[in-house]
Amino acid sequence: MQQTTLTSKGQVTIPKNIRELLHLYAGDKIEFIATDNNEVILRPITKKADDVFGKLSCEGRKTLSVEEMNLAIHKKMREKF
Image 1: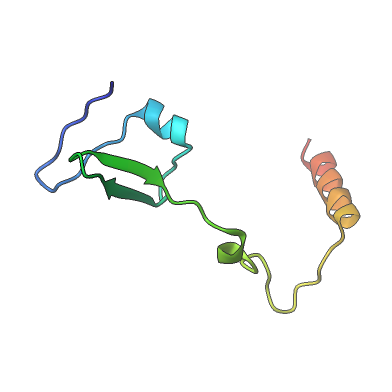
Image 2: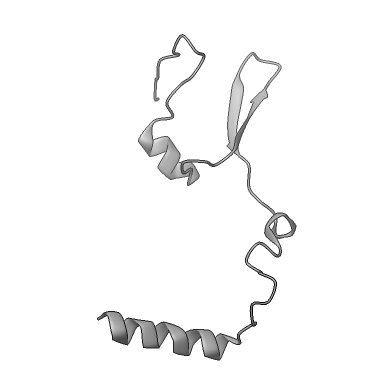
């Protein structure tokens, strides 16, 4: 069992092993669900594909095939290393 302390601002620190277990990182969203037993469930909010669709597209940017992306990665790796 993990314990933490509530601050005067109502904040708590989620222990590192719990963050790792839930794959939580800075900026992630979580939700608290109160049960009828006066217990609370902490659950990460996962994003659906529809929520992030189109985030990488930029107007005027040429789309690349997987092969073109792989070639660009290999070229950059050769230049850097």
